[in-house]
Image (cartoon, rainbow, N blue to C red; front, side):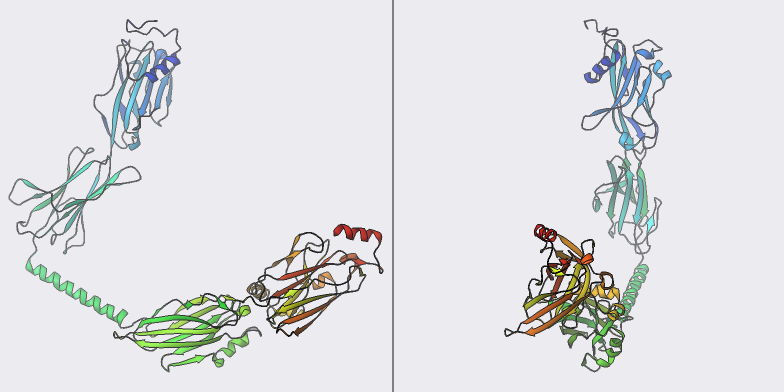
Amino acid sequence: MSLTDGRMRIGQKIPHVIFFLLLLGSGDFQVRGLTVTGKDGPTEALRGEDVTIPCLLSGVLIPLNLQILSVRWSRRLQNGTEYTIYQFHDSHHQSSRPGSHMNDRDLQQGNASLSIPNIQITDEGDYHCSVIVTPDADSATSTLHVSVKPQTNLIYRGLNEALYLGPASCEVGYPGPAFCEVSNFYPEEVKIRWVKHSKGITTSTSLDEDVSFTTPLRNRDGTFNVTSMLNLRPDSRDEPGDIFSCIVTHRSLKEEISLNFTVPRPSPVVVIIILALLVLCIVVLLTILWKKCLRKGEPSLSEISGDGRIPHMKRGTLTWQITNFIKKEIQINVYLKRRNDIKLLISSWDSTDWKISYNDSSNVLSLLEKGAKCRTLLSVEMEVEMTKSWTGKYKCLCSISITPDKYTDDGAVIVVEVEHPSLKWPVSVRRTLNVYSPVVGKPVVSDISGEMWIPHMKTTLSCQITKFKLKKLQINLYLKRCNDMKNHLIHSWVSVDRPSRKDNTAAGRHSRDPIEEDSLLEDAGYDTMLPVEMEDAGNDTILPVEMEDAGNDTKLPVEMEVKMTKTEDESYKCDCTISLTPNIDTDDGAVLAVEVDHAALEWPEYKYHILNVIKGDKPGLWRRWKKRVIK
């Protein structure tokens, strides 16, 4: 095969598709008679218009046989990558750009131009038209420019007017900055210049000084915004009637856009009137400011600061400030809001009598009677130091000393409320108390002792708790039967008045609010699910304990006798005796758990005992073998 005569005679030997692919990789070239021409210069179009990119064929027989014609349109990106946007092959059209098309009749007449409707900014670029008329091939490149016309706006603010918008001339007041806004244009290249047309002179003067420009900002649709500012200053050379113009030049415009305004020199009368109005406005503003702010002197209340964590039954101090109030009359109230409790007034101070009231029982007695019987007041002392500055404003430095209880005041809220004649409503701040128990004198719990084989319907178990300092102690008994997924609370004992997990008496169960009880349990550090470790059973299975009073469901009679004594080392000791009446049918293999809760413990202590209930005095061979397996 030879190319010496300039013609590639491969139409019958090389398939049409392979020849077309060879053309795509070869770039721009021409083979003998076929000539493809595009447009010498770029094709200009505005966004939204329909565009036709030319591609004309010459040197071929007209009309063309579409069976031997292949056309490929591709677009070249800025990084040099080309991708196909339209292809005609084997009399079939294939488009990857929505709406682009070619006409078969135009192709037969040698016109392979590509029509693209509703052109967008993203369609801008170089378009490559590759044509094969077997056995000849050629290609051409055309450039498409897409433009968006700018929107212009002139803004001038003078002392005699609020705002001026628009391209027409306008009579305004004193010189000042003028803004020329150009927005929603593409491409980014735009020229903005300011000129001055003096009265009686035909030529214009270009204004290069006192002109500034903002950095062009790109919008989401690819267009740009830019603003130019002209700073006008009083000048004796300016004559009344001089016209200033902002002239905008852009690729999308056939003619320049000119925005004009006029700045006459104001008369002395106008200046005097304007100055008088300014002075009057200043006087009015100062009067309003004095009446509403300085004269009233509304107090500013700071946040409550002080000890972050307060030890159990130890004194802690909280402080705050009240500043910037003019009238001396002020009242400070301190309230306590415990969980699931009403807000109680625990201290109050009034500047009229300069006296501090500590826990006035007459004020809070009626509130105490409405709550639970176990509710007690927080021990609190408040001190207030009032001073006056040289500006006539008062300042109060306030502090309170409190001795909170871990079991009633942890999580409680201290509210400071200030009343003053300048306030329509009192102002207040609040702080949540964080009370913790020092880790001293942790109780030591012994194992549960008793008979390994419990005769049917009778047994006695014992447990000892020693070496704890604080007298507040709580002991709970739980029962977990073999075929029951729940751990039932069957008995509870509390050494002093403190929130217990369950009240075993019927009166206690019906008198306490379930919601309040859950909150008290949470305050005391309890969880609704307690871990029970099956130590006696020889494994580490952890069983959830549900806080349910199952006294009527388990039907296991139980009595617990606790004897508390004080030892020589000033610690306490508890001897616990538990009397059970188990049933061999329901309680054989059940787990009895003793839970001990104390302020010195981060988590409650547990001891466990498996109930092996038998008939008679000794177990049979099967039960002895089963016991060894369990161990």
